[in-house]
Image (cartoon, rainbow, N blue to C red; front, side, top):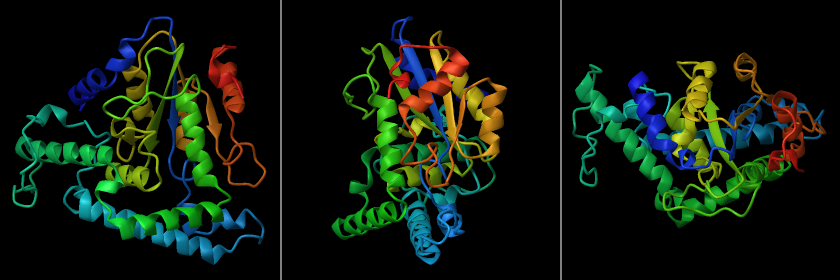
Length: 318
């Protein structure tokens, strides 16, 4: 795993390495569930309960169950999840050293004999699947869903967004603010939008306690794929969040980097404290400034300043 991590670091930070030594880099490390999206709290009713009777608990549960089915269906039918569920990796490039780069356009994933034992041959087959998954992610749902399915997905998203008082769309908009707050985004050929000409750079990283493939599928379904690249999604399922945070720290190892963790759980809080990174705790309670809608760049700027001192970074602006 260590060798894979080093390869991962070299290949996915080239754009940042070219930036000047004086350029600031803000790395926003996000939890997913109950932070950027709501799912568990819809399914168990805790989101609605926070509103003391003004939200229909049953309606939230129904929406959560529909989302759960959509996630599992997409995982199984398009992202090899039935084949690789027991081989979770902490990030999409974890097995890149086993990938010989062969053309996968005519590769038959159903007939390549991917089975135990977990030897080098099967690691190569798993690496092929992870590369294919990353490519599907970058192509987007429009290359998976037909017109009828796209319409259903749009309607489900809108219904859930309305039920949650625009939690989903406001969280997505806030990630856009974090990523592009210096100037309008300029998309590159690989669909990432990190410009090296800014006075500050910003990158969104996702560290989730769930398995990697369902987490990538959630990014697609909840419209986060243009804001979080597949290489920037980490699963702490086996390794823990502190280990993921350490990999991220090593990956973005430069003088003027600043990290900020946003999540709702104790594990990311303790991991952030261990590395002396600011931690913003997301709360469900209506009226809290640490929820969506509610969280602002000004609030993040306060947390940055406590750890790193005052800065002219756009993260300190409202």
